[in-house]
Image (cartoon, rainbow over all chains, first blue to last red):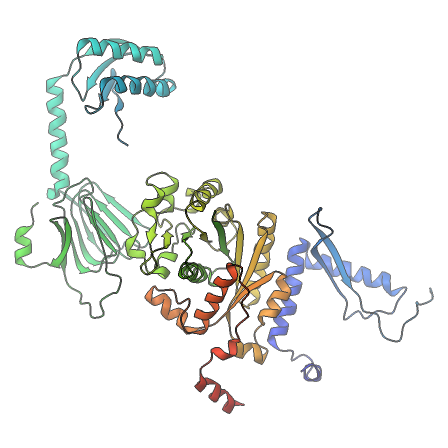
Amino acid sequence: MSFLSNFFKGSENSSDIAKNRLKVAITSDRAVCSPELMEQMKNDIIEVISKYLDIDTEGLDIKVTKTELDETSGTVNALLANIPIKEGSRNFRRRQ
Amino acid sequence: MKETVVIKGTKSGIILVLSKDADYETLKKDVAEKFKKSSDFLGEAQKAIRFQGRPLTDDQKLELVSVIQDNCRLSIVCIMEEDEKLERAFQDSIARSKSIANGSSGQFFKGNLRSGQVLDAETSIIIIGDVKAGAKVISKGNVIILGSLKGNVYAGADGNRNAFVVALDMDPMQIRIADTIARSPDKPKRNRTKETKVAFFEDGNIYIEPLDRDVISDIRL
Amino acid sequence: MGEVIVVTSGKGGVGKTTTTANVGTGLAMLGKKVVLIDTDIGLRNLDVVMGLENRIVYNLVDVVENNCRIKQALIKDKRYPNLYLLPSAQTKDKTAVSPEQMKKLADELKGEFDYILMDCPAGIEQGFKNAIAGADRALVVTTPEVSAVRDADRIIGLLEANEIRQTHLVVNRLRTDMVKEGNMMSSDDVVEILAIDLIGVVPDDEQIVISTNNGEPLVGSDCGAGRAYMNICHRVLGEDVPYLDLEETKGFFKKFAAMFKK
C-alpha cells in the first residue's frame, strides 16, 4: 500500500487526507494559536536546528498537546516536536 | 397546595380572602406569615380591609387586624362589611365569563401552528389551518380545527367537561378535555382515512367519533 | 447511588439521541433502573426516538420550575418497566434551566436510579453546560468524518476542563467497506487523533432508520447496530467485551456479491 501511494504521488487515499487535515486542525484548535503562527514557529525551529543538523524538513511535525507531568500536577500544555534527521548525517555539522 | 390566605389589593384598601376549610388558629398563623413576607411590597400606608371567603365574628376580625398590624407596616383604619351590590356585580361578571368559556363565544385564528408553538385562548377557538405535531392549542372553550390536528389540544381548560374538539383530519398526539387526557395509540393505524371527527368527554373517557348527525345533536354549547 | 452519564458530541446529527436511546434501553434490558433525560430544550427528539411522544404531559422545565413533581413528569417506557424518560420542553428555550438546577435534579435522581443518561444538545452553549452539570462520566459520540471528529476534540477538551474524568468514545456510523477502500477513517484512526478510550464502534446500519421510524430502539436485536449497542452497554457496566468483527455483520449474500466485485 505504501509503495503504491508513493508511486502515485498526490493520489493519497481520502481517509489519510482526512486524518492529516484533522491532525493539523486539532493541533491548532488545542494550541489556541493560529496555523500561521504554528507555521512561522516551525520555520524558525527548522532554521535554528538546520545550523547544527541535516534534518528532514518534510517529515518534521510539531504540535502543542496536553500531557501529564506527574500525578499531582494534572495536565499541562507541552510543545512536542518530532524532527527526523536525514540518514547519512550522523555527525553534527561543523559550524559554518 | 391551595393557599389558605390570599391578599388582594384595591384602590382604597385590601381584600383578604380566607379559606373556609382551614381552622381559625392555622389561619391566624398563615395571615401573620403572609403579611410578614409581603411587608416590603405593601409598604407603609393606611388601608381599609375587607374579609372574604368565610364568616368571622367581630372579635376574630379585630384579632386578625392586630395580627396584620404586628407583622407589617400597614395601619388598618377600618373594616368594611361585605357589600352586597358589589358582590352581585362580581358574581354576574363571573357568570358572564363562564358562558364565554362554555363555548358560546369564540375567536378565529388563521395559519398553521408548528412544533413548539402554543395558542392560548380564553374563549372557544376556530383555527383555519393545521395544528402540527408538537404544537399545542389551549382553550377554555371548544377547539375547532379546519385543517389537520397532529399536535396537542387542551379544551375546557378551566374544567368545562362539555368542551369538545373538532378537526377535519383528526390524528392528534394528545387531547385533553378538562382533567382527562387521551393519547394516540402507540402503533399508528395503517389505513387511516382523513375524516372529520369530534372528540368529547363522557363517563370519564374521551371519545373520538365521526361528526355525524347523532353526535352533533348531543353537543351542548 | 446512581451514575450520571452525559451523551455528547459537539456536532449535530452524529447520533447522540440514537445512542442515548439505545444505551439507555440496553442498560434497562440488563436489569438496571434507568432514566433518560432530554436536555435539548426547544428541540426535543428523544421522545419520538423512544416512541413516547404521545404520553408527554409534563416536562423538564415543569420539574425545574416546580410546576409538578419529578415523578409526574417521568414517562415509563412501553416495553421496559425499569426505564423512564424525562422529556424536554418544546415551547421554552435553553435559558429556562440553569446548570445548578440540572445538577440538583441529577443528584435527586441518583437516589432512585442506577443510571441517569443526559442527551445533550449540539453545540457548546448553555444547553451543553446544562447537560454536563451533574455528569459523572461522558460518552462522546462521533462519526468518522473530519467535521465530527474535530468537534469531538473540542468537546473532550471542555469535558476535561469541567473535571469530568471518565470520558469514552463511541464511533458511530462506521462503514467497513469504505474503510477498506481507504475512503473512511477507521475507528483506530479516530482513537489515535482523539486520544481517549474507545467504548464502542457502531456500524452504519439501515435498521437504525427503521427502528427510529417505529420508535423502538434496536439495541440487542440481531443486526450490526443492535449488537454493537448492547456491547457498549456491557462495557458501560465495566465488563470486558471483545469488539465485533464488523465485517461479519454483512449477510452471506452481500459477502458473496463482494467476492464477485473483486
